[in-house]
Length: 82
Image (cartoon, rainbow, N blue to C red; front, side, top):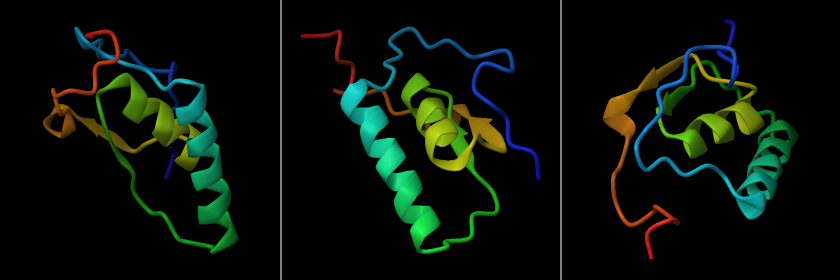
């Protein structure tokens, strides 16, 4: 099943969207390595519409199969709000 690559589709831009920082990208690559090392079968990936979720899906799983705004949590995770 072909995964949707980040940047290859019309993106949903959220008002307070926060993308992964350097630490988040490093953690995502570590997750990818661990999943590959244990041969965990991944058949279907659903991503939130948030920037950080799409980036994580791309780095860990090579993309995602579908996206849902129902998975968006608007909480204290906006790094721009102090």
